[in-house]
Amino acid sequence: MTWTAPDVERVSGLLVAGEREMLTGYLAWYRGTLLHKCAGLTGEQLARETVEPSNLTLLGLIRHMAKVERVWFRQRFAGQTLDPMYDPGKGKDADFEDLDPARACDDYDRLVEECWLAEAIVADASLDDTFTHAGELYSLRMVHLHMIGEYARHIGHADLLRERIDGATGW
Image 1 (cartoon, rainbow, N blue to C red):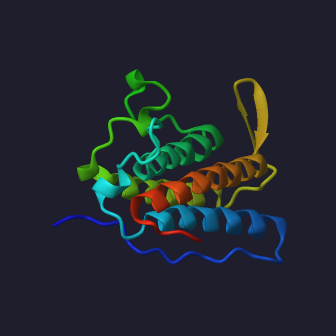
Image 2 (tube, rainbow, N blue to C red):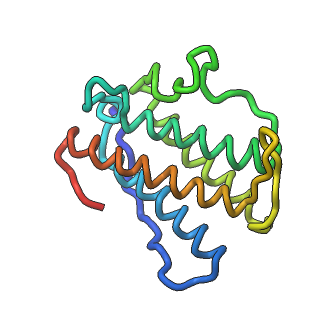
């Protein structure tokens, strides 16, 4: 049986809310939007390179965002020591390479899990909580803004990739 990415019910973005609710709400919406862009596609379709010469794929975006969630929330903010998610010998873009369509379900589940773990880590934290990375002081607020920007950029890529795969467009 061939695995296909499940349908996703996205939370709607808030139009009026406090800062915390606005930031976490929009991050949740963007997370759901990336998964929505993948809904109904098989592992083979998710791994398909459609904008040559780029190696960008929907599966690569799923893997990349799982890594980004993990790095910013678990490793940097929470200070957890974790093994690299992908082969460090492949360089910083390993998440976009060596894709295995047969493991697409696992990669998808990993992103969902990393999002859930990130939400749990920040549940009782203040947006003003800070950490130091590479000699610079960062706030949890900045992490939320960075993640919203990261998702927004890659959802633009996902729009184009999805349209090239099966013609689907729109939000």
